[in-house]
Image (tube, rainbow, N blue to C red; front, side, top):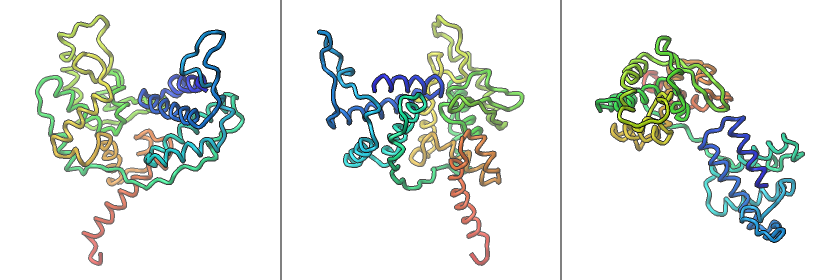
Length: 318
């Protein structure tokens, strides 16, 4: 099973262009499943083969074909007993479904045993978002002079103006920005590309940052050519997702909005404000890069709350 997991992770990385964060989570989930199976009494291989002691990772050799839906149900039940959140249980089960689906596609299995295990019911949580005034307050918070301050403002402006994911933002190269046409080319999940329009204020902030971008790598000894990444760290390399998240969180806290949302909340704010302004749901789906309309439809609940608020304030019989 270990080789199957390694092959699956390589498939996710190579063919599905999964992010390092996604690969890490999938690897953890599958390793946790292997550990559970081992503790549940599945047979182990001999620790010594031809006089050579095998490593701990190879001592246990269970074939994927030996795993049935009962084993997966037992794993899910064990997670519930240990108090794991339902959302985490659902994610781990989704990982197993994807893993076994891959094995079916490769001809290793004939049926997906995880398909028979129901997903735990999750409470419907509406995504947190900022009001327009709160967004204005956030975008007014960067006050540092110099290239780092220009970069931080460009990150905030672009994040809200385009609604792209944090991983998509840090994955941008300079060539992906079309300042003249106010467009950005984004590479999303599954290596799918899309073109997203960017507002004038974000374009202005990006233009100002690009004029100072080279200052971020001055004084840094580099043995390789200057990076093509749009957003750089203080060492002159590509800004990481964690680094970008820290920057956004820094200004959320500075403007008093930190307890309300996470950095990802700017993406929710983008979608909500578009919907409240009358944008078509299909268009928002394309802009966000959602593969399914149902993922975008959760924002309609937020829009209904907004409409009800307007109705209560405006209608004489409300």
